[in-house]
Image (tube, rainbow, N blue to C red; front, side, top):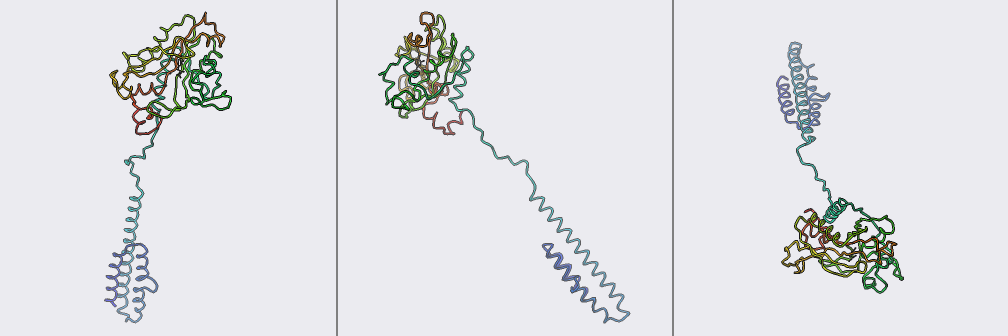
Length: 341
Ligand code: DAH
């Protein structure tokens, strides 16, 4: 019996040691200490022992039981501790791992240029107007002295909404001159940026939709030198001091005299390159002294008041401002391009 007890003790302790889970440990507890367990089976044989043998054997059996119970408890505690450590390890949050980066957009380069242009004009006392892209042909053409039969009114040049060619997508921001004259008190100093539409094929310098900034001043004693002085100031503020401009005579129905303004090419500095098509100059706007007919149609006396107006291509201004070589880059919205600004 002594040997049996010793065997149970050593086997059980080894088994407890080898247990990997608390379920395994529980099964071992039942195997050795349960009602039908091995130790119990040995104890049941105590009755067969003589009265002298019994106390010593009883004591030994109790020692074995206590030893097994103590070992069970210790192993159980160790297991719990390990399980806890593992759970803590699995649940830890590493606060040093960088978070997922949120991509935040930013202003389109053309609108950066527009904001700069607006700021410059506002600083000179101009008001910024907004107007409709769906416009009356009467304002886009007739009131601007572009009579029926003017080539720009052709169906192949203009997007009309009706057979009678009365409503259209504005082909220029110039109707904003008329809207300003009709709604504002004199003197007037306005700019009016916005989209315009023409039936043009897309290429490096053309798009069926593009942006213009219209500008207009009407007051007493306004001359062409005011126009040149204002535009040169704006261009130098936008592109930097010493930027070279040139004014060429041109024709627009709503100005007399009319001109176009060019800026020396930002890419080649005037030598001639693909960006300026070998010219050395880039045309950025049309301008002129408001035609007396246009003033008269708005009820303004051309003998008392005079004014100038211009319409600049915003894409071209932005291209010059940020040294962009191809107009299409402005519209394609390729983030690899846009991210640079
Ligand atoms: N509207 C003209 C165009 O789209 C540009 C222009 C020329 C605007 C002369 C003006 C101006 O205000 O005075 O080509």
